[in-house]
Structures are given as structure tokens and as C-alpha cells.
Length: 197
Image (cartoon, rainbow, N blue to C red; front, side, top):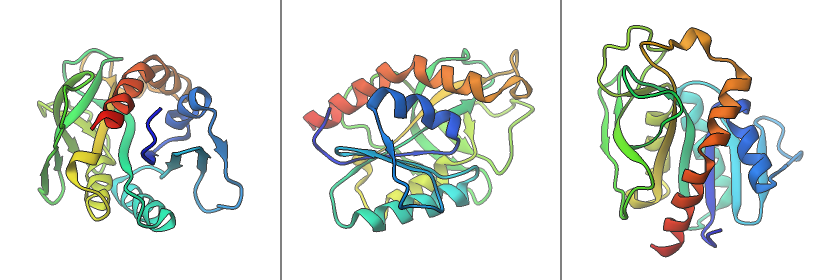
């Protein structure tokens, strides 16, 4: 595992569960307002749903850590009209569907999985008309993380949870945990790349 501090931000406890198990992260009970898990150089915070929650949790974690040169990863689920459920995708561009903010991601190495544009919406995308990944947190996370780290240390790694054939209505916590668990090898590869660069 990389020696660089790693800050993971998930929206849901179900997204965090598999990560905590894999890396043996332990709940920090001194923090009461948001679930926070730590071990060694890795810290994971569960922000809650929505871009404002992701923004606030990311800023809070960065302020708590101080000036450490951390790498930031928003890990979670996303929908897409055609990509297969279970595919892992790294965001190449993050778009805010509300205020039209836009950030070009910087990936300074060969990506460990497919890449695609990601749109953050204020609610679930039920019509699947946008030709991008869709989530509810990445824009808030990315805008916050840019205040504390350069773009080449900020990543949004998403696992496809729903598409036109398998809509979001079928998502549950057990499914989310399994989807994330099945793609943690991609997170491993991303962390290995961060250690090199």
C-alpha cells in the first residue's frame, strides 16, 4: 500500500463496508458527526448522500488532517445508460448537472480501468438519457478536494450500479457492498499507481 496519505470519501455505509473489511480500517469513535475509519495512512469518511454532504465531509477531513500531501478518492456507485452493472470506471471529467461546473480530471498514469465523463445530479437519474456516468456526490467532492490537493491527486472511481436494463429501483445495500467488493482490485491498482507517481 502507498505511503502517501489516502483519503477515501464514500456516500453510503454500504460503499464503505467492503473497503473497511479489505483494508482492516477501524472506526474512530472520537468522531461522532460522521462515520470515520482509519488504519495507517488510509482514512475513509462516509459523507452521506448528495454533493453538499460530499463537499462538507471532504473539507472537514482535509482540515482535520492538516497540511499532509494526501491523495483523494471518491469511491462509490453510479448509473450509466449502457455500461454493464459491475463495471469500474474512473472519471475523466466531472460535470455538475445543477450549476454546470466542469472539471477535467488529471490521470497521470495508465488508468486501471475504463474512463468516462461523470455528471453529478441532485437526484437519481431515472431516464438514463445522459451519455455519461451519473452520481450525486462527485462534483461536491471534487470542488472541495481541489482546495487541498492538485488535480493529479484527486480521483473519482465509480462502479456501475444501474443502467437502462437494470434501473436504480433494484439497488439495495447488500448489492452495493458486493459491487464495491468485486472491484476493489481496481482500487488496489490505483493505489499502486499513486505510490509510483
